[in-house]
Image (cartoon, rainbow, N blue to C red; front, side, top):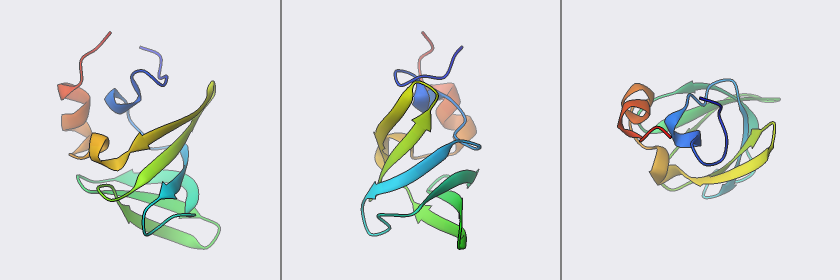
Length: 88
């Protein structure tokens, strides 16, 4: 299945470029290099930054354009999130 705006939460986020657009960590941007149940880790120009998912809103860059996603929608371990999301 192709990764796009309609099914982004059902896919792996590691390797994508992203930015925190709302929340305490607003302005952090870089490549997503690691994901846990409650955090996303960004490799930035100033090193590794770990951002909590829940109070944040992220902009994730896809080839078709950017997608805005609330951190609450991607809470949970990546492997569990991929399994619980409906496939189209």
